[in-house]
Length: 358
Image 1: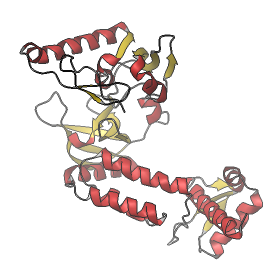
Image 2 (image 1 turned 90 degrees about the vertical axis):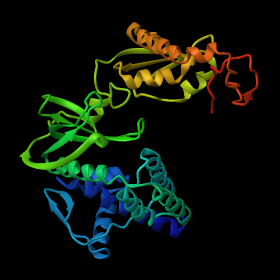
Image 3 (image 1 turned 45 degrees about the vertical axis):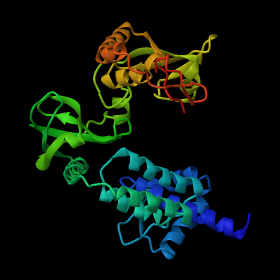
Image 4 (image 1 turned 30 degrees about the vertical axis):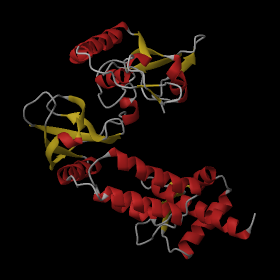
């Protein structure tokens, strides 16, 4: 290994040592654990800590063999691998599609992170941020998010006015914030917390919160609460219902997509002898799941449970009634698409029931 490569590896490891010590800020972390995580011996970790103290003037305290970083003006030495740098770039692209409003805090965050990257990726992040800035800011949601974040981090109950879909006006709620969760499915951010009015843990969409203010009321998040466990039975953020076995059968034309895609952590996919993909998942029957299935049209059939088959059949019947007149008035059907090549097929005597595949 060249000297330059060894120096790069050392700087990358030292940066990780700092990140790990800060990650374990509350209780500290042992040298043995740092050595295990960094896959080096303890003597190497001791040398890294000494270098951080002498070269970067970092200050550590060691209590019962556990190191923690003393707050100071110390700036972390950040060195990223190419794939770590790519991760930051991809995160910026995901956030670009997450919201249609400009969030200045997202921009400044990626400006700081982008400064540490390879020039080419840095330029791509800069272009992404320039595109973000073309959007109008949503100052109301920004203020609300800042307030509920403060309440979450400081364990203070938030007072807010929330407008649910089935109400004509917003109503006041007192909520203990347990978690803040972004959703790629519907391009929104959600608050998961205990509602004092409903006496249960609920999910609130942040852009439906009209205003929020912190209170002086303290609360504790239950030790057994884990947002990952809480959300695991659900397709999206509609956290209602009891999970049950859902079995979907995808037609051969889209079986490969089903085989390639992991939609849910409970998913198991098998190809049958006829080329269909049979997908089994453990999920609650929510409107998010129904919307997903309807989006595939006739390319997927619900095998189980019967209640979900009935929901899809009812929805398809109502959808047909919406467009029944268009099918009866002799209008020219929309162009179809070949399911194997994705190219347009100009056959006016066919109805456009096949989706465009990518």
